[in-house]
Image (cartoon, rainbow, N blue to C red):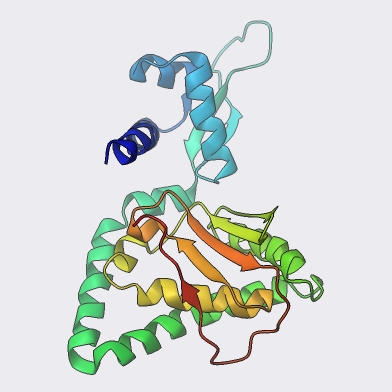
Length: 240
């Protein structure tokens, strides 16, 4: 119990600070790193670390500060702004609540099978776009996982793939449906099935943002084998 608390503490602080940066950019618009740091009481190095991470994740972008009148020597300071995708996410809770209510209605009316069918339909378009982006990836599952990571990043999932001793690992650092999937894991299961079909082998989902993990992690075993339609997808929880 103590170990869990020790691990969770820094993660919560990190998310809280990033949320505060996001809120300031939402309220103030174009803002310099120095202004953000002064408002939040952070050192230049600390605020840069947060902004660099948000740049990588596609939450902010930078441009030169507009200076009215005469300008002194040197290049103008950079200002940071939220991307459109980040702005949309700032107002997602209303839509999350509506989506959750709709899925509850589907579950009451059609049962679990109806929810699963809905989830599968929702990810079908994503699967089609990713498959197109992976056309030149070849047949090796790990190479396909790397191509899939690039395709998912373009979709806003901030994904990356790495090789580990037991095979490969696909990590997604953002989940656009995390709040809804926390109640309806069928959404995660449908997404995992898509990953399995796209990389061409059986995979194991080790962790999900929807269940409180910091990142969605999918393991790609080294054993050969091509996944067939209807094959099961294993979801393994590691936080229990």
